[in-house]
Every structure is written in C-alpha cells, then in structure tokens.
Length: 118
Ligand code: HEC
Image (cartoon, rainbow, N blue to C red; front, side):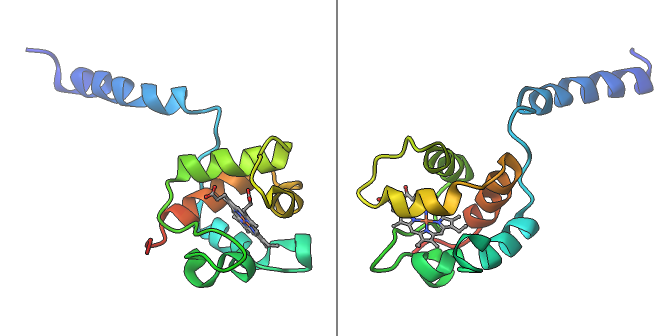
C-alpha cells in the first residue's frame, strides 16, 4: 500500500495539470467584472447595461449577453477588440472593446456568464 502522503501529492499533481494548460487565458474575477461592467469608461462611464439592457438581457440596440458562456463572451470581446467581428453594428462594440486588456475580458466574461438568462 502506498504511503498516504505520497499518494495524495500524486493526486494533487494530476489535478494541477488542467490549470497549467489553461494558463494562457487569465482566470476571470467576476467581482471585478461586475465593477467594470458598471463603469466601463469608453463612453464616459457608459455601462454595458446602457446598451445591453437591464441585467444585460438585451435591448432594442444590443443583444442579450446574459445566458451566454464565458468562453463565448470572451471570444466575441476579443473579436471586437481586434476588429475582426463582422456583425451589422460591430463598430459600436469595437469602440467599447478597443481598450480592453486580457484581464478585463476574462473578468467581464466571468461576471456576465453568471447572470441569469431570459
Ligand atoms: C454603445 C452601446 C454598447 C455598449 C456600451 C456595450 N455594447 Fe456590447 N454590443 C453592442 C452592440 C450594438 C452589439 C452587437 C454588435 C454586432 O452587430 O456585432 C454588441 C455586442 C456585444 C457582444 C456580442 C454578443 C453576441 O451575442 O455575439 C458582447 C459579448 C458584448 N457586446 C459585450 C459588452 C460588454 C461586456 C459591454 C460593457 C463593457 C458592452 N458590450 C457595452 C453595443 C454596446
């Protein structure tokens, strides 16, 4: 029978592998994301909800974000930031996302993914 301490450290090593594989994308901090969503500065403090509606559930001018996965949101924000998004109103979102850092995108995505969808 293996020494109990030894087998436990082996288990921890195995668990640590996925975390290393994901290291390229920063982990999202939902609390910071909630703050950013409220006072994102591109429009002089115009919040995400100003266009995406209450609870980010969508409005006449912008689609719902609530109910989307963090991976989807991060992928979209990256596309707006780099100017590769092709939506009809992508220019508006590009203006919002252009100054986002990787950490901002991860935090906003973590926050929004936790909101209840429609
Ligand atoms: C000035 C209005 C405006 C503001 C402010 C705004 N958005 Fe948007 N957003 C839009 C519009 C319009 C679209 C759809 C663009 C298109 O046609 O591709 C969009 C699309 C998106 C999408 C893609 C949704 C999808 O279903 O593909 C994400 C993600 C997003 N916005 C996140 C955010 C976040 C996070 C914030 C706050 C930091 C924010 N937006 C602030 C107008 C806005």
